[in-house]
Length: 212
Ligand code: AMP
Image (cartoon, rainbow, N blue to C red):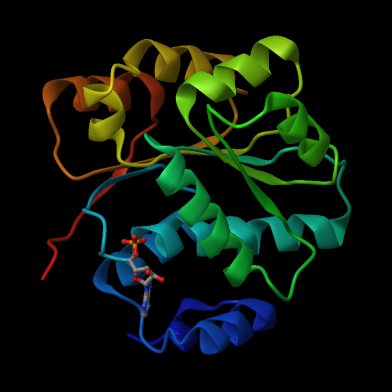
């Protein structure tokens, strides 16, 4: 499969060339069509498989198509990650993939001054990538509003569990609009992950890839 087969908009194709992504990885070939069609997804994939672009490309594409029709400002996609390093890295990748579009991703994580994050949030951000504790903090302060979020991603869900974020993840998921797409990526599928999927996803499509 090639990226041309995935029906992507020109600004994303241009960014893929710019970033040197010539061929989709297996998780990208499998997940992009599923996510683009609006299905929930449960992906069993480790870091290094290209999973970040697998969920980011269809999120960016949907945002672009929505924006063309005109939409209200606000946060449309939320990505939860276990660590600040992953939040920063994923935000960078999304911003690279959206470099030819007026779409911006912001990492929010504990340890960084909250006032600075609040100011950055006012700059027209559509995607936030955050650690669960800090996202909860912004939710309580109402500096992150959940009412327009249409896509949520739990990235490295098993790692978030291991770090004790189960309750935070459940609280955040419960606060999101009912009408939304829920994507979950995890290297392992322990029972607790399957339970979150059962409780918060609707008929998820399952994709499994192994790292070479
Ligand atoms: P991830 O599994 O999302 O952490 O991605 C691992 C690395 O692969 C990242 O540094 C990406 O920039 C890179 N990458 C993702 N997709 C592709 C692709 N289709 N071609 C080349 N590199 C890629």
